[in-house]
Amino acid sequence: MSDRNENLAPVVYLPHGGGPLPLLGDAGHEKLIGFLENLPLRLNKPSAILVVSAHWEAQLPTITSASHPRLIYDYNGFPEKSYQIEYPAPGSPGLAETLRELLENHEIDSSLDNVRGFDHGLFVPLKLMYPEADIPCIQLSLVDSLDPEDHINIGKAIADIRKKNVMILGSGFSYHNMAELMAPTDQGRSFNVDFD
Image (cartoon, rainbow, N blue to C red; front, side):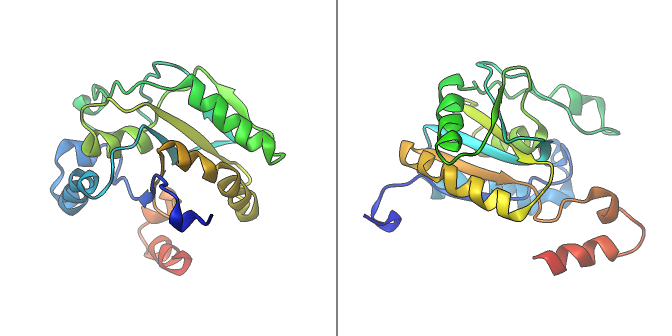
């Protein structure tokens, strides 16, 4: 049976804005805020969410496996309230193990991390999409080589997780070199457009 005929949770790829600014009601993020707040109306509610964030790279694909992950305020220079944001979504050690097994079944070495918390690539968009924080979440790191073929193979390996009503959320721009994007020239923006 083809995927088209199966009831699969969605794969969603979206930007999460500039650090915590969407959660602070920043006027420059108004369209993004509205989009994120309204997106769940177009989706069935998932049983769990797997987030692949632009803000976590590891030598091996690594999966958060804590039952109650803390938040990582992986940004700086923002107002004090940016470091008091809460998003107490539960983790899912069982789902993390299932994901690790899917990778292993495709001969991809991976590891579980029961210490790492959720970075802003998870909590910024999900606090706007699902403010109740009642959906279990896990994160999967990028591989620090950033090799496209490796990531395509990881994607193929984990695709079946969608059959368990687990939404896969890619969080971050397709081109996420912040130093170049913030440079005084338009070179970073040009690279972003070229990449897209």
